[in-house]
Length: 266
Image 1 (tube, rainbow, N blue to C red):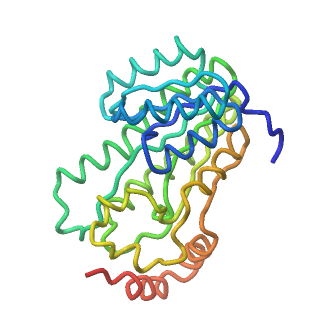
Image 2 (image 1 turned 90 degrees about the horizontal axis):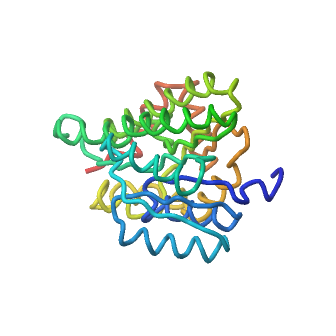
């Protein structure tokens, strides 16, 4: 896809990079020669990711302890990246979490925390990075949303609401930034085989109903890295779930029946 060397020497900031999809995105970008700035709360684990990125890229990489909900810390870390790496060419807003419970049983504290991590921190990071990208006249913001942003299922009300918000924000932000040479991509994956579900679905009920639709994080990360510094609008995976989301738009009542029966989680 396009220039295979376009990431060479470009600074790619990835949040939630200490494990799961974020870690694999870091490796996929590093393989393409990017200067990876990996950020997450688990600095000890991040340092191992940083070292692996150095091996893959043959160049520098960076690790930053970051709680994305701490506005002051976000500002300090972004300034450190600019001082140490020189730029932020690509921002991947990957940090996030979910908890699959019925809406009436979801504690308000969980709802607030999920919106802080999944939405408000993404908006803050996107704003800060976009200001720097506008000065450079180029850049790319990649927001990890979900197929839940198109097709909500039972016991995912709050999580789906955060991802609907991410997709809506991204769609508007894209229109505002295009005249500045900045691309905005939303990634809408179905379930990915990572430790995300250890917290979101400890009983395994959700994953057990999806079987072959569960995605490999390495394959998803490769698709994301391939899209970096392009004008790709969305990445939707797997194709069967994206087809289901389009079907749902056309036939919502029938979709409600089918989804309710498929995801009747106990």
